[in-house]
Structures are given as C-alpha cells and as structure tokens.
Length: 206
Image (cartoon, rainbow, N blue to C red; front, side, top):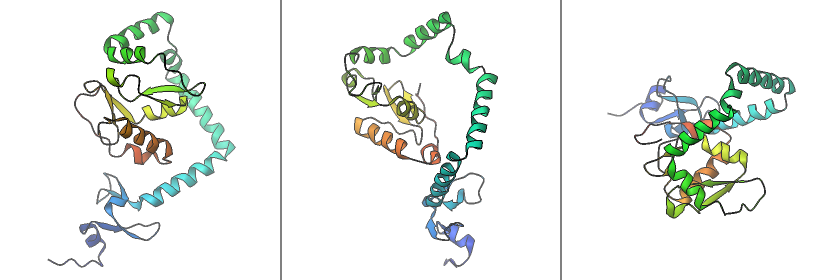
C-alpha cells in the first residue's frame, strides 16, 4: 500500500516527522522519546531541544534574582528534608554505616587498598575505579571532585560484575575505554535528557 506522504500522520507512519521549531523533516531517532506524545516522541528535534536548553541555562546564569531564588529554595529543601543529619550523621551512626557498607561491598575496599599508594597527578583530584576486579584495581581514572560526583549520577554499580553500567541503557562498561568514553560524553553534554533517556532496569545491580 502506498502512503500519501503529504499527510502528517503518514510522516509518522514512515518513521519521520517535522520539527515544529526548525521546520525540518527528520527521522524519529532525531527526537527524544516522550510517552505522552501520540507517536512516543517530542515534536521538537534533539538539536533544537539542546540549543533551547543551553540558551535557557545561559540566560538563567546571568539572572541574579533567579540564582538567589534557587539558593533559597535549596536551603529550604536542605532543612526541610533534614539533609544535615543524613549527610553528616553523628559519629556512632557514621561508624555503623561505614561497617555496613564495608560488609556489603568488600571488593570496593579491597580495590582501594590495592590502589592506595597511587598518587594523583593534580592536588585535590579523586581516583575513580572503573572496575573493582583485583586485576583492574590499580587502573584508576583521575577526576576532579565535581566531575567525580557528576559521573556517579549517570552510572550504576553491578556488584556481580564488579563494574558499572550506564543508567542510560543498562549497558555494562566492561573496559576502561568504554568507561572513559561515557565519562567524556557525560561531562561534555549540556542536556541531561540525553544521558537519562531511556532509563532501563536490569537484574543484578547493587
């Protein structure tokens, strides 16, 4: 059956649609997924979405009123949810937590013991383990504290494999090269949607 491609619904059936922002016809793979849309994708292409996200971020960074409002909002959230007691627990609680964490992840502490004599090239940086297997324990990636925190938002630890998976699609980062490539992608991206969509679940992650 021949599809009349001048109809909007025909474009969708053929796996293509027109971005309402740049008015360019593109394949559905060039649009972020969105379960509430009729075709399961946003009506704005990825390029336009990223450009708009960056423009808004740049605009807000120069808005002192918005920055102060966000600071107040985060301070209120910090006290409302009692983050201080969660992130800075009493010494006895911290000791109990540390013991429980060590018992749950003995391979992590073993890897850190093996790599404890490795000195960072730059002062104040962290040494990130891409794998906690004994043979990889000394093969670490040096990151700034902020970059280290960021990358852990987009990976999940698979204890059975002693390695990390992408939160993006659950794929195992089973080589240093794959792990480094994902770090580079995370740190260079200006759009968090790219990194978190689609989120999948899998069996044996800890």
